Image (cartoon, rainbow, N blue to C red; front, side):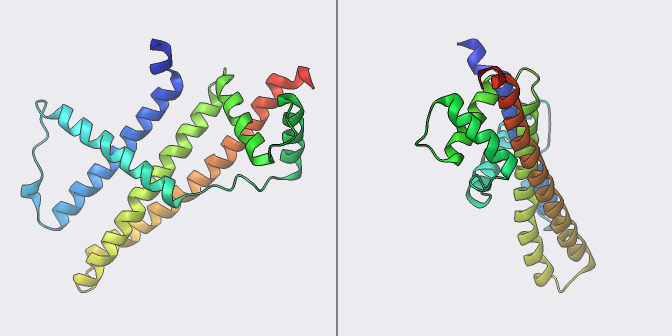
Length: 198
């Protein structure tokens, strides 16, 4: 039971939530400073460290939940080489009735279970991390845009808006890149481990 709770996959996952939530928390604090609301920010001390930790972790979950709503990866469009692997996976799993996207999900689960090197898990962790940061700075871009208009196009708010948009775009591109890495690594792992059965 203990190994299931504290598996490598769960550790990667929880660290991702914490890192995404920590950046979200820092962005919120920065915006409160911009609004002149410093009094709303409690001091960071060793006594309230646990409270800050829980808030960051909670924010990480919220950002990932929002990401699940707005970011949908295409799991139905496969290249010819990917289709070839998935057809082999059909024979491996001894099923003909499932679609290629359903077979891909089986490969996903199979590769995670057999991921000896940890590459599938690490690519998934990076994908989740960049996706979460995209949501953080995407939301901050909307907030910065409202401040940009309400402060008569000030240089500070213009800079914050441009910087937020740039970071959101960069993290979106990184999330797409790591999803591509993850997808390829899942199919490669499946092929390597199951090749003797084809």
